[in-house]
Image 1 (cartoon, rainbow, N blue to C red):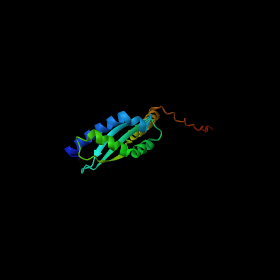
Image 2: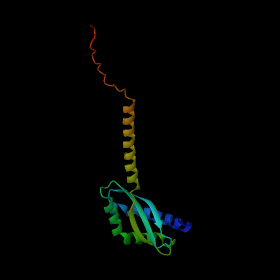
Image 3: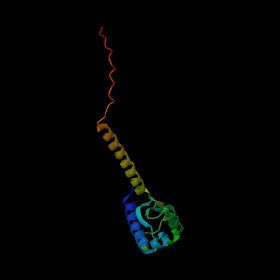
Image 4: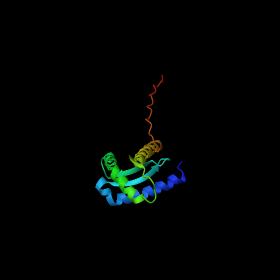
Length: 143
């Protein structure tokens, strides 16, 4: 559970980082669509973790690696923006947030389950023709 102070710093850092992404982000991630889904500051305020959702790119882990390579540049830009609000700028870590990918996967699984249920229900409701039993011919016992 985050304290009020952490929540306030989360929102301030998130706002500054999204401004940075709007100005300089294209040079990092190119044509990909990157959004900041979450920002978490540790209780001692020495580390901030950015969770990024990345779309329209075949290798989203490469985008996260590019952010990691520019950590110093990003930290410096955040320091300029937040110098009047924070005494120390925390260290930065980037993570890929793949919760939407998991949601899409779960939707596909549920669709397949529904289709299977519909198929089973259709089979249960379909009239079934049982094979007709052949009657054995009786031998007549007339004498």
